[in-house]
Image (cartoon, rainbow, N blue to C red; front, side, top):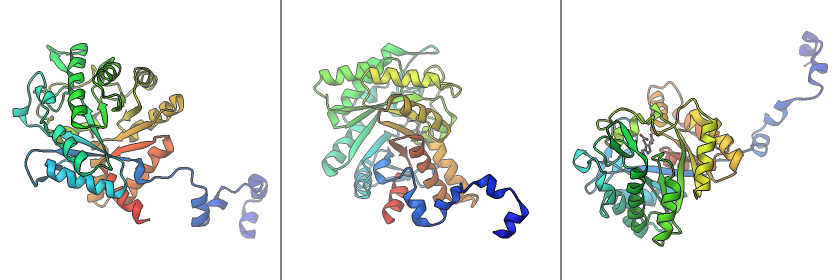
Length: 340
Ligand code: PBG
């Protein structure tokens, strides 16, 4: 110490006793000064569904992620519930035979999503089920809405989303998550749900959803990559915009959203922070497929410590103000957190 003070004669004056490192010295001081915590309560686990029985089929572009047949999805939901994860979100894989220009499969009361809702509700009553409202798993052009020429039709699409939401609510979905970015869909879906006696079904609005290249592996997982014609820039937001995200979030809140979401995650933490700050709503972030796969790919090469990067990324969402995170790492992170 004396040595240092002699080397830099002004150190005492510069520091004036202010030493930030004092509280970082011991594990217990670090613990008592931490501002945010991460627990399994913070996770929503997205899983993929596929036809069949006893199937767990790897998704090539997402190492460690599988598509579950409905019976296996029940086991996955049980595992998530046992870990303390509050919600599981289900996304169906559909091949070309399940796709048409109308997204008809969205109305099938026996589609994979509805089957999973019924089976999971019955077998795992302790977990919440979230379902995705958008036509892209079921359209032959891979868009979230109805296509006419080059246009995605707004109001006509909303009529389809209403019918999809009601179908999911009847099957037992607790949270519907409109991810389509049509204008006015939250209000329209709320009104339709209430009119049909589903006033307890929660709406988590994908309020600020960006036209992002980070969704690549997901489209592969749900069978949409080959199908998608063009891109989604006429309905999803430009990555250049932040204020517009606040207007989107505000509209969805005014139309009756119970919870709002920002998507993708890590590259959009400023938006999460601003949305939480501005509205104080339950605010969620979706750490999407591309983010997951980037971590896994670098970890597989030995270039990063995958476990540590996983935990650090998830912690960052909490610091930014998110109440929770949709993450494909939910089970691994919860397992780790429960181990202490
Ligand atoms: C589609 C939907 C997408 C995701 C969730 N719902 C993809 C898209 O908008 O093209 C992406 C999730 C992920 O990448 O993990 N309505």
